[in-house]
Length: 110
Image 1: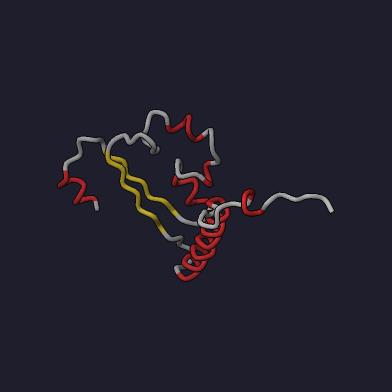
Image 2: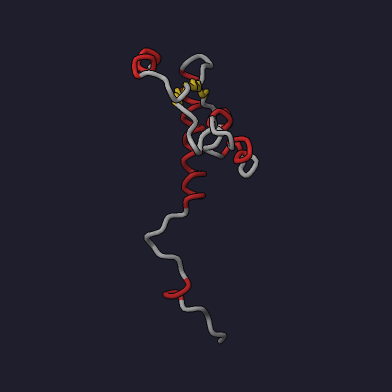
């Protein structure tokens, strides 16, 4: 027969996880669970509260956020939590504070 590749050399390390497949499975479960919550709450979806203080380098408050969002699908990306939440049946309530927000103000909000 024909020679084949040595599986010991050419197969992935068993300790590695396929992050894309894992994320797809988890997001599928999130969507199913969100539907159950919405049904139990007379149509109100579950809510994720998101509080951001300052202009973090990777987040939606960054000056580069819009540019980053063009590189990925918003509904599957951590760059746009509101869009990703909506795609999976979760309402995202975002509150953005400037970097000089006091601890007292933040605590009152929470």
